[in-house]
Length: 109
Length: 112
Image (cartoon, rainbow over all chains, first blue to last red):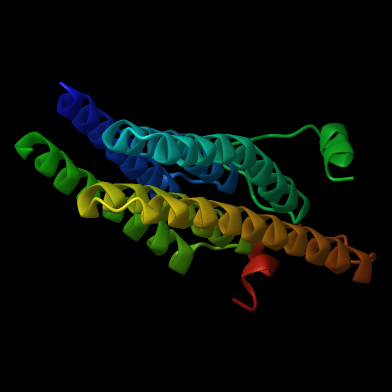
């Protein structure tokens, strides 16, 4: 029974990692690529680390795996926010997006 | 054991395909921000690869590798984002008269 749970966690985590890579390669815009890499990549890594915690099932490994998941969940939004702000302020071209001039003046300040 | 081995093989292939896609974006990304996103993505994918390899080799030391890699990747991403932001503001500050050229992502891909 535990093997089936671990197998499901591993395959779904690998699937989300694959989807994140595909999104980084194929989406047309920096902010959309960052959306793919941050959300799907964090979910995939979290699922695989949860599988590690279920597989080894001792206290030290579960603690380390949960700590890694929490660290990824805390740092991925911060990193994505910083890259997005830097990319927007350095003047990237957005795909199919129209920003009001007044809003752009406020955002790029 | 058979189900677990098959799932591990499938997941190794999927994660490495994700790393290859991110590497393609790292090579051809038009701006520096794209390359930073791809590097961050590759770090997160290699963290999950360390998790898979910990299960495959029955060795919990790779979970420590995953922790350290997540930490270093976050620091690298933050430092590179600060670098891009500061460089953009310096470029904007050096050329205040240059208003007829639209600010596109072309100037990001100059030196890289």
